[in-house]
Image (cartoon, rainbow, N blue to C red; front, top):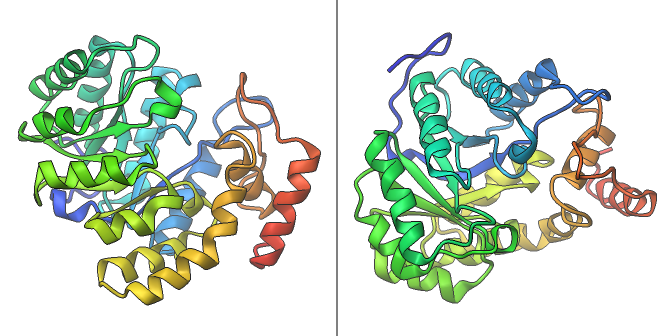
Amino acid sequence: MPCGKRRCKNFSAEDIKGSIVAIVTPFTEEGSLDEEGFRELVRWHLKEKTHGLVVVGTTGESATLSKEEKARLFEIALEEAKGKVPVILGTGTNNTAASIELTRMAKEMGGDAVLMVTPYYNKPTQEGLFRHYEAVAKSVDIPIILYNVPGRTGVSLSPETVARLSKIKNIIGIKEATGCMKQATEIFRLCGNRFRVLSGDDFTAYSLMALGGHGVISVAANVVPREMSRFMEACLKGQWEKARKQHLKLYPLFKAMFLETNPVPAKTALALMGKIGSPAVRLPLAPMSEANVEKLRNVLADYKLL
């Protein structure tokens, strides 16, 4: 597997666990990639013991990034991570051929796994969803994590379809972001222990971990990486009372990350904290309203993050 400037390490599916940050993509005020800012974020996460990185996911504003920009972000993340933690690359689109192309690129660059959102806007049937993922899995031999977020895509993977897909060798897990514990329970019941189930919402991470989950792909970890790492470690060790207290402590911050559309609050928080140079997002996302900036500032102050 080509590694470029990174040190190769072969992570197994079992290594994909704990607090995995859905890392933001910093932009300059003019709207171009802030490459050095992104490097610094990755370095910070390694220092703060984040267990893994998702690059170019929803929180990374994948919808407004060009293929070339995605490749550059993949490259930087892999260079900086140096095989210390799994790097999961976002390659999902609503075009199966384009998803295969991006996934091949991720494989060639040395990604440890890919995260693939369900095709949005097309509104495929369950059979269409199955065939989409099957086509990618057959075309590229890389671990694939399904990503089910119907609030954004307009379509939801049924637990039965997830169970069918779990039988494909290199489909190793799912980022489950419906917020529905009934849905999650069915996935656990139908898919067995081999399949990795990751919470797609900080709000539901504690409950999903109690059901047998393996971690969270987290927005809040952008802002409190060490705290999210400790939270997930407590869950993984079965320290449920400790984890419950951490969940309740972090809950106001979880809410603050969704005062407006993700990743606007996370990027605003990072800018206020001095971790990125600008809170800029790309249209059609807009800067955070002044009223919500003030609410966010108060929450960050409560956590002594300013």
